[in-house]
Length: 393
Image (tube, rainbow, N blue to C red; front, side, top):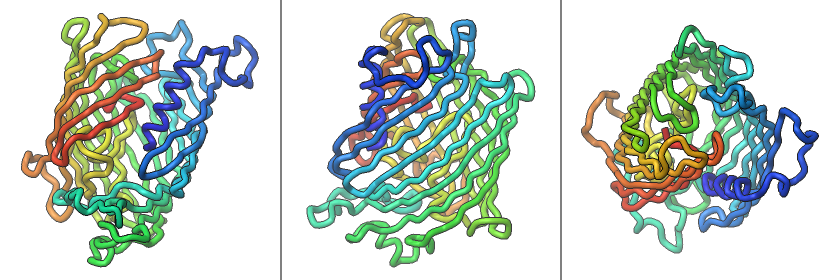
């Protein structure tokens, strides 16, 4: 639902001529640009959803076209509400190229997702469509409430190597709906003692990033390597004590002018006593993850696998319909995704228990950062469609 809303808005923005958009607060030919669009859609689970998006952007100028970031900085306000009771507002500031050698990212958000998907905890969680009846259509749903302030500062050490330090301050509550469902069963069984209880979660992180990608929006060559260590201490702040270690590697290899081979591997392990709300987060300094499922594993639905440890592999063959470079790249993709989580067992590099899926899709890039895409993948639970506003990796 959330990806669909964004795609509707981006499609509207791309279709509208610049002069037909709603008035800008800046005079003509100002070096800053602002843009906004409404969001309006309907889904069977959330009902009618309406909202809007507004951004003030300092774009990359003609003389800086070799910059890898998609803009110098951007201030965005994004929000929507649905008839199901879901509502969300996010204020974010991202500055990847304002001061050469520094990057800044901050976000303040309040979210209430009334029908978030929840299938249980651990690699053996299952999805059985027979459980979703007319009497209980939201058997695999939970109500997730989160309020957070998060950010990071990154400093270039040399060449393509960066040092990252950041924080995450939040309160979350993950609870059952009023009807019978998987999370209600897990609560009765005592699977996680924080189900239905508001929690404070405060953590910090440090890490190293090697980023030699040719471009951040749609790379065709280079490497992205990340190693990030995070920790929370209840004696200092919050209700939880845990560690989170995340290592990932993504690579891109052009084969001629039309074909790019891309691959990614990610492993994350948590120590201490993490709880359900902290399982959704995968640390990254460059790319946003969606756990194991959704856009990260395109043949699984959102949040399909939750656990304190995560292992993910992706492989793409990307074929450009038009020879590179072109003003509006159109790319076909064939992919294989594999992933699993660890809960009661120790994290390890293994192929045992992997949930594997494959499929294909189509992506269109408008300007430097306007990515619109759709993929269809067949995985353990059948066919999954995913809408995208960015490349998955």
